[in-house]
Amino acid sequence: MRIDILTLFPDMFKGVLDASILGRAVRNGLIEIHTHDIRDWADNKHRKADDEPFGGGAGLVMMIQPLFDCLSEVTGEDKGAKRILLTPRGKPLTTERARSFSKEERLILVCGHYEGVDERIMELIDEEISIGDYVLTGGELPAMVLIDSVARFIPGVLGCDSSTEEESFADGLLEYPQYTRPADFRGRTVPEVLLSGHAANIRIWRHEMARIKTKENRPDLFALLPPEPEKKRKNSRKKQD
Ligand code: 4FV
Image (cartoon, rainbow, N blue to C red; front, side):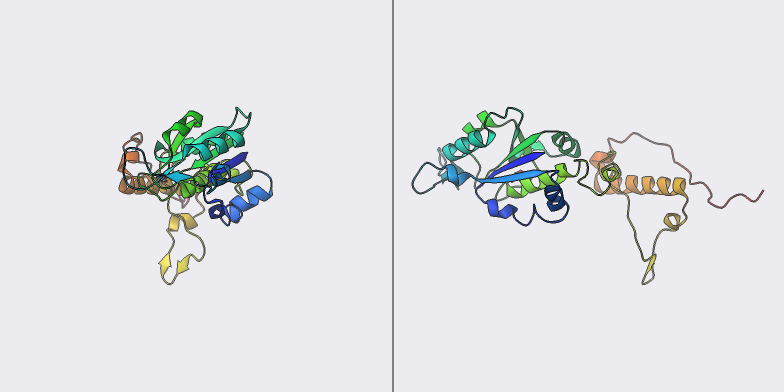
């Protein structure tokens, strides 16, 4: 997959896109990422890319000319590229949307700044995406969040592709509690069932815990879950015949 990022602050992406899992994915050629400084397309001698809002109001708005010419040139003839504006008024970024974006050939991400972008850019935008109901200083962090969430669905990016199946939101549930060595940390122990090796009981316990955590933290998601019968854990000790 190719990802182009249009931003006034390309340096913000250094460090994030060449570290850890994303960095490895780029090095392995699974993802190709290009950043473009919108100011390079400003056709005024002061490379100005923002101005006061028509109709008054606080703050500045990103000017249409640098953004329009940058997006047009970066898109070129590539009609297959999906052009996304990161904005608080966008559709929410969800696991399903991240999964569907991961199937695209090419994403072009437009990062707004200040109070936002001149509305006439919408002529060149296919989708508006929000990472959450709060206002940030820029679209750069949302672009990084989107790239990270999408990259995880690209085969080969994660150590084992199956891990996207067993995680929060994969089946409408928040994820179950995780534990690793040591089994006893200063008297803080691990639930017995996880040490029992009894796969079915472990599955039942994890599902129960995921439902409890979902009910506690995301009643909106819990309400969407199908009612389910109480699953009894099988007694791990073989019945002595
Ligand atoms: C945002 C969000 C966000 C708003 C004005 C950038 C800022 C400035 N983007 N999800 N929440 N963007 O707050 O995506 O342009």
